[in-house]
Length: 267
Image 1 (spheres, rainbow, N blue to C red):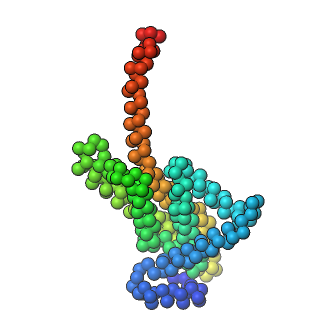
Image 2: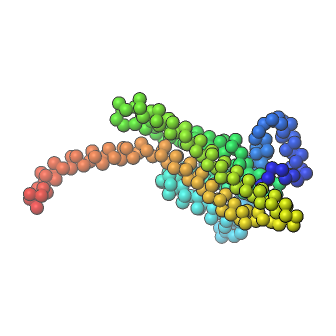
């Protein structure tokens, strides 16, 4: 929504206090404040949903279990059997980004993800977690894929791989930022047009309905790409080993089959 809209009284006072603490020239103050609100809402919603779990789920517990099960299948499908290890990270990213996107649909608020500082921070989380888990799962072997194969091409492949890795957070940052900022701007424009008619027509309502869908899509895209990056970092070395083992087992098998009389000439 438009940043010109006034906040409710207590939220306005809290934001003024935050500006006093961080400095009025800090560009992301409003976005940080809104993002903090979303953190509180997500934590409260999670607690409220899980505070009285039943063997036969009802109400919000049904919704919570549906979300968790969907995210579990998502992780295992994209990342593989070890995907459950990353469910807390991937699930948190999805729920948090989706909630940040939706916040801009409420009167007096603006989507924090329409601020490049917030989207860059989220992209940095994915970037550092990807390399942390790559090192954790593969150790020193994780560095080998930066050098490429054959090894004598390392002086050429290393800069290419490093540029590709640095391009990932940039891509994540501006994809999410650009889409949500455009969405919020379009809604603000239509609100202004509705007010300009003098009849206060809710011209923005169709766009807001579409914005719910695009907010979900952008959260899914960010989470999907993050999962793919993590999958590549934690499984690339295993693929090379599996390929090498397959070749190793195939070579001894050929003489054995020939010795056993299974060549085409004996068929």
